[in-house]
Length: 220
Image (cartoon, rainbow, N blue to C red; front, side):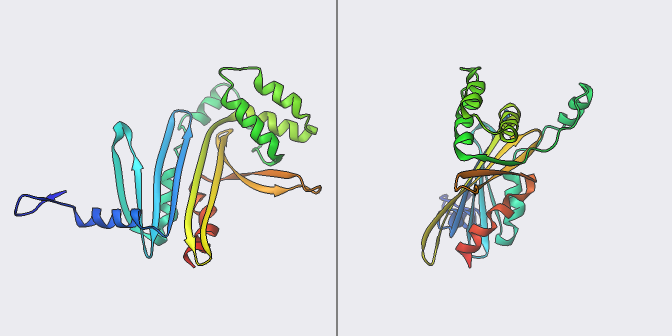
C-alpha cells in the first residue's frame, strides 16, 4: 500500500496487476502439498502474457508474485516442498541399501482403499495389512502396493480450472511422495477394461510439464 497526497491509501501498481491476474484468470492452479511436516499451499493464475501467484507463508502471511506466463513452469517448481537434505545421509548411516524406484500400475480401487487406510493408520495400525489382504492382488501388484503403503510420506494435489472455447475445463494432478522421490499418478486401463492408476517417477521441478496439456487446451 502507498499513501497518496491526500493521505488516502493507494494500492501499489505491481500489487494491483498481480491481483488483476488472480481475480480474472484464464487458468488457475491451486496446489496443496506436503512431505511430513513440510507443507506448501499456493495459487497460480495465468491471464494473457502475465502470471501471478499467491503463497501462504508461516504465521498466516501471504506472498504475492508477478511473472511472465512463459515462466509458469519455473514458478510451479516452488509449489513442491523441498526434500530433506539429510535423508540420503541417514540411509547410509543405517546401512540401508538403495531400493528400486516405485513404478507400475495398481487397480484404482486398491489405491483408494490403501489411501484411506494409510490416512487412518495412527488410529488403526492393522488397517493397512487388512486392506492388503482383502484386496488379494497378484504378487507383483501386492509387492508394489505394500511398498507404497509403507513408504508414502507426502502428497501433492494440483487442481486446474479454466475456460476454453468449448466451455469450462477442470483437471487434477496427483503426486505421492514415497521412497525419497515423487510419483505421478496417471489413469490407465487394463487389458480387461479395469480402471488402473499408473505410478510414474517424476522430478520435483516437472509440475509444469504435467500441467502443460491442460494449459494448452485453455490458452490455445
